[in-house]
Amino acid sequence: MAKRNNTWANIDWVIILLFLLLVFMGWLNIYAAVYNDEFQSILDTSQRYGKQLIWIGAAFILAFIILLIDTSFYVFFSYILYGVLVLLLITVLFVGKEINGARSWFTIGGFGFQPSEFMKFATALVLARYMSVFGFKIHKLKSLATIAAIIFTPVLFILLQNDTGSALVYFSFVLVLYREGLSGIVLFFGTLIAVLFIMALITPGITLYLVLLGVALLIFLILNTKLIQFARIFAAYLISIILFFLLNLVTETEYGLANVLIAGSLLGSVVILLVSLQKRLKNYAVISLVFLGSVLFTLTVDYGFENLLESHHQARINELLGIESDPLGAGYNVNQSKIAIGSGGSWGKGYLKGTQTKFNFVPEQSTDFIFCTVGEEWGFAGTSVVIVLFLILLMRLIWLAERQRSGFSRIYGYSVAVILFFHFMVNIGMTIGLMPVIGIPLPFFSYGGSSLWSFTILLFIFIRLDASRFDQF
Image (tube, rainbow, N blue to C red; front, top):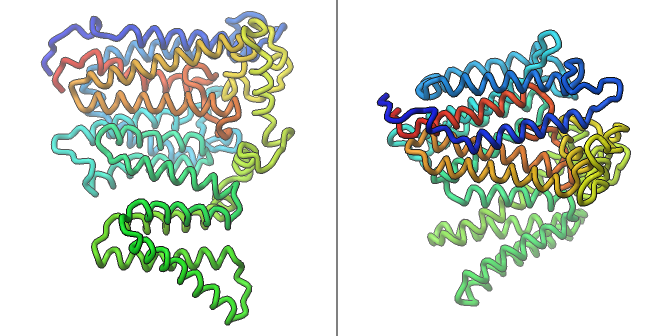
């Protein structure tokens, strides 16, 4: 490796300043969240804020060590780190400790270690190494299959630990793939799936299928300059529905109007698809496939929701979507969090003066719901400062990623940005009732050594890579 610049002179001190600010503010709010008149010293290591201070000190040491390590280390050892952490994910299934329903922790004495947190930076390193190899083409089937294996291997084992929140974080890597040339159609279908999932839960079946059929016909109408072509498509759907309606009468079987419409529209789409493929009408074939896929997906939502999700996840989603109201059960955390944030007003009640905080109305207030402490004691002004600091950090990371000369550093930089963005968006979203409660920490704020160290390692590896952006590796 040819050294052309002094590494320390090239370190981005803006990012480090933002890191220090967020960590310090997080520590102060952890102190406020668990404050007790009997343990007033902020340095008391028997309390969470004292333990967090120890972990902050260790995080600073980790950050310093990372900055000393040559960048080639992260490239060369990326696969080894990934493999070791996958083994830890498997091992924790058998010997790990179950906390809050998830068997995802190793415990040594009073210290807990969560390998899924550290798996994030290892996955980012491996993705960066694989995708930065000369001649890599993201649109090749082999490339997509390998990328899927890299991302979804840890997802599989994390789901087996019953830690859905941590598993969902890995889906944020799709945004990195999009930056590296993946077609925007993937994002479109991802968004479509999310919308259909929600609509299938909150909309009566027959209404949803009529909407889907109406949208499909509207698109067909827009694409057809000749009404005769659209009339043929409309006739295919209408005849198919009539056929199933007559079959219903002949067999004297009460299939129900919804089932007749579904079966008829599916048959109509299959007919249009076959004709489109025969006549090489690509657009018509795509629309037919999307409609078929959408209907089939909505048919599986109820089954998947009832059989694949845990009961507490179902309750939280139902509460979020307004399907059910359980303010003393599934909705308790979020309702109390919103009360705490709303009671802070514009300027807050003052530091250490939050009543919701002092009387422990909000569970997990020093971890997953730390943001409501900010809202109650610092008000709208305080929450705005925290959000702005995170947004500046994210925008700075993207800017730094774009100036990288190596594909490895750029891809890793974007991975850091999307992971932090996902945590930031979902954590704050769930405290104000816009996201389901999936139990993921707010970076640098939430109490916990594993999360703080993992985010520190994730961030400072990129700071080190950026500092050596003029080096060849």
